[in-house]
Figure 1 (cartoon, rainbow, N blue to C red):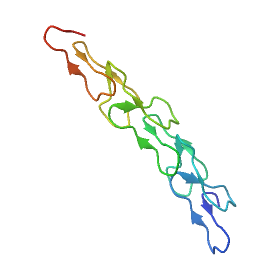
Figure 2 (cartoon, rainbow, N blue to C red):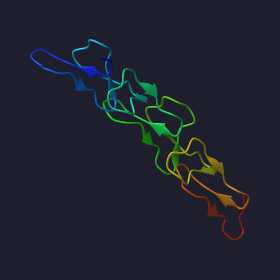
Figure 3 (cartoon, rainbow, N blue to C red):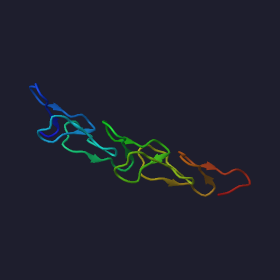
Figure 4 (cartoon, helix red, strand yellow):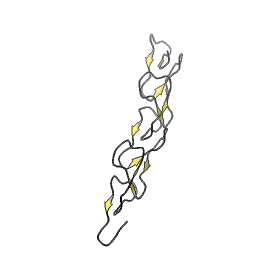
Amino acid sequence: SAGTYSSTAMSSCKVCGIGSYSAEGDSECKLCDAGSSSNARGASECELCPAGTYKGAGAGPCIDCPVATYTDEEGRSECKLAEPGTYVSEEGSSETTNCSAGTYSSTAMSSCKVCGIGSYS
């Protein structure tokens, strides 16, 4: 059945692992493309990774973007770095947060820094 496979001389079908899928009658599991996964064993298709997650090529589940990175779209194969003036403080974020007045950040920051004496933002 879909989500399982069988090759020559097998007495039963084996279940496809996470990050792979099969159609009914397949003799092997196919790997999901980068940016998509089957997040359960025995899948018959792959789904795009949701915003805030990513997956490169190969088997495995979608992974939360690390702190200081994000994805704002489905189906990403890598996370974006937080831009200067923004930050990302939690894993699995789908957006950045702007630094407030009197604070700043450079690229890929998990928080903003307070401006020093005699400077502003």
